[in-house]
Length: 412
Image 1 (tube, rainbow, N blue to C red):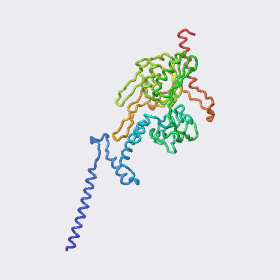
Image 2: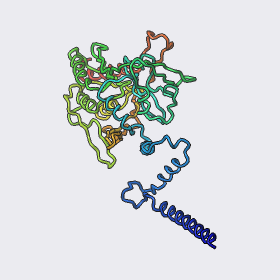
Image 3: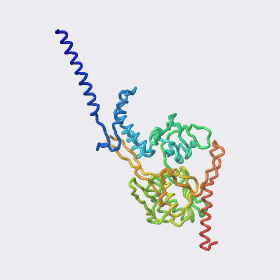
């Protein structure tokens, strides 16, 4: 009897433990934090418990779960959320990458000298910068970047691509490139270097027509443009070709300041449209010295950002004609936000509109005269003469305008 009593007591204890365990498990599971629609801490109108269920599954079943840290889930979730925006210019930088971004913005770096971007979900070259490695090896605006060091660029963000391409000067990076008209992709081995961003070249094409090629809207652009424009006027320029081909942009303020040379004071250069519909108008505030001079602007698919702002402002306000190819379509404003753990978020906060309300972003600006560039017959012959039909057309248009002015003034 004593043996049976002990057995019975033990069995009861085991049953009680099982019941308590099950009740406790179910109660605990049901009371696990669940971020639902009505939760004031949840900014999303969805049941956020699905996210935690997914994390639990990964931690419980993923084969390499022991190698994961909780921050991996957090940062991955943020990147995934931003990826759903379909905006290549909004991105997230972990603390280490955020520090590197800050260093790149404030100092020199090793790279290939090309502005890159994403269009139609394809990573491509917006514009190679004159005199830098990318241009020297033959990269062109519009080239599709399929691989970087044998890593596929499918679904790769611009920021990640830049991180891989940049590196110590003197080292090599290999880009797999496809160009419209080619039968297959080609590999380009590029030696990284300290990138020098060119600004401006100018010359008198004829005794009456000045030619200014602006490569970048950097901090030196305004002063160099002032010198070029002043010298052109002193030399008797009556017309100007402004070449913005392969100019990937730069500072917004520089574009607005340069527009002041061509527009009347107070005219709208560009408008920033925010999410609430509010518009901020940026207006010309320059000397207007070239306001009455015949101008033609050259553009192509390497003209982006500040280039599109200037071209759009002059087209809308003065009817200045654009020659070449459609611009890239980078017309949005990004803001950097530092997060509490040292990470950084870059987020698009507004879109740019031309004075007449044309949206620049993704759409770009179409030329009045669409003319394709001439191609070298032999790519290996770097010294071969290549005609420039786009520039030739611009020169013809300027000549026609000068003749019309002379007719009105009775000079012919």
